Image (cartoon, helix red, strand yellow):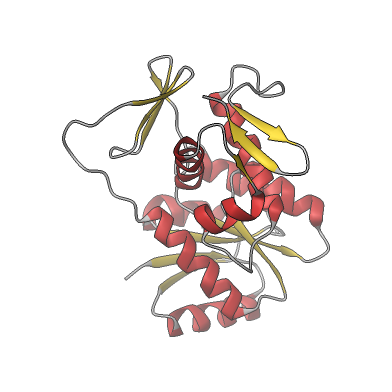
Length: 227
């Protein structure tokens, strides 16, 4: 059974989310603040964190950054529908996905299922072929990416995004294609998810993220990996 940690200060929303998630078959832990949530991340080992960005003791951005400093647990943030800036900032802080308030349980459940599918990737033992993209080495079966011999810490979403580019070198991939193939969203997706994760991936694998040489933008079409 997957365990989900809900970090939300509004007790009525926490109760609603817990009941809905338990109805979906998940075990649920609750935290009313960022501090309590960080403690449960360390002690409870959740499979996914549902994180509200508006918390009483610290911002959800700071909670997200602190989680990412030591864990790759999937994070879905919850933000107000009109807070576009907050949504982008949350993704760039390390969140894997987002939902807007008021939360639609059917949509949330779909996003959780898709996120957990990506995070359930398991390593396999044995030798494997090393794929090279510029100075980046990709070992898919181990879930490892190295640059200049040093392992690069990627989230599972970033890892699968890189794999998708590596599968289609020199081919333009649209944002909709990436949403469907990496996130598993055909209708629920948001192109800003792709843009934020591409920016994060560039920071980790490009020599000069502001002048990318590996994953380039094709204006009006999408992104292309240069091999």
